[in-house]
Image 1: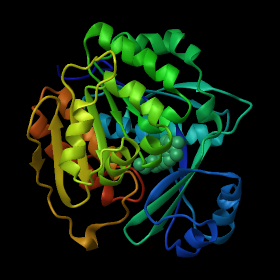
Image 2: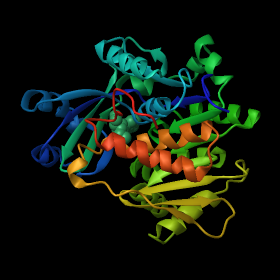
Image 3: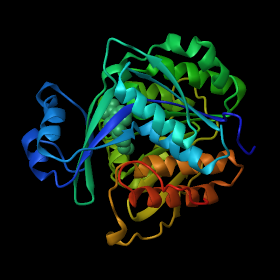
Image 4: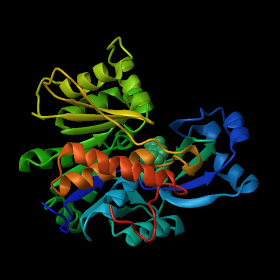
Amino acid sequence: MSGGNFELVAIGNPLLDMQIRNGEAVLEKYNLKANDAILAEPQHLSIYQHIVDNYEVTYVAGGAAQNAARCAQYALPPNSTAYLGCVGSDDLANQLRAANDKEGLKSVYQVDSSTPTGSCAVVLTGHDRSLCTNLGAAEKFDKSHLETAEAQQVIKKAKFFYMGGFFLTHGLESAKVLAHEAKARDVPFSMNLSAPFIPQFFKAQVDEILPFSDLVFGNESEAEAFAESHNLGTKDLATIAQAIADFESATPRAEKRTVVITHGAEPTIIAVKGNKETQIHQTVKINPSDIVDTNGAGDAFAGGVMAALIMGKALDQAIDVGHKLGRMCIGQVGPILKFPKEQV
Ligand code: 26A
């Protein structure tokens, strides 16, 4: 398999990121943690206007799964990726389309013209990023969109599916359609835990989709949140990664599940269902002066791993590609990669 035929189909929440630097006062005002991702609650809804009025805002295409798909496309031949999600009928949506077009990611958007496109306040403080999201049209995604000719065209051909865990706040039924399609055709379905609040507050949804998942991405805080909500009684990342790999429901599905847990500059942990021992994969240390911002680094990692797997590389090599793209993303403003393109 080498790419060029919409091998990767991703689904998630298309968001426009509104990024600011030196946001300490904003964290305090809205009671946000320095490194977290949350859904905006009523008390957060003024944050978007607040940062527009008081900070220099950089607008950049976001949405975790959309970032991962764009980054996968970066490493793949043209026309290898497509993305499903719901946007409004506004300028924000056009900006997202333009960013996807620039990278060659096919936007297969549902459009809800009565709701604005979702946005995410990205509050940077040092090397941390805090994400506060108003889903807007993203949560209006309806399963019926998967039946449209445009969606069917890519879904029926896909060789690899990817769901952002964030999508589980509202989209389990649509995700299951893709998971069933993957199982019916024996192609991988992959997911990302996305943020601690997903395994914490959307445990039932995670537990329903995990059995379908052949490849699961997460980071250390998401793994810890999974351990807590599943009463694993441990904070040891290798033990948690193995438990996610071995997770079974009444109807076991993915015969082989690989779990990849990143841990910032620490080695990445890999667990495979049924194996007794986890493996680690060293990262290349990044010089702190080369860090621009960490928004999207985990998405770029996941995109790189999937692109390499689609190109037929072994998991070990794929993780190297993931680390490389994660590093490249950290050197850019926002969840994007170097332009003009570098050979990956
Ligand atoms: C449901 N929530 C909270 C979200 C997100 C999200 N993407 C989908 N759903 N909250 C933040 N993001 C995106 O995560 C990227 C960094 O990994 C941001 O848009 C940001 O680009």
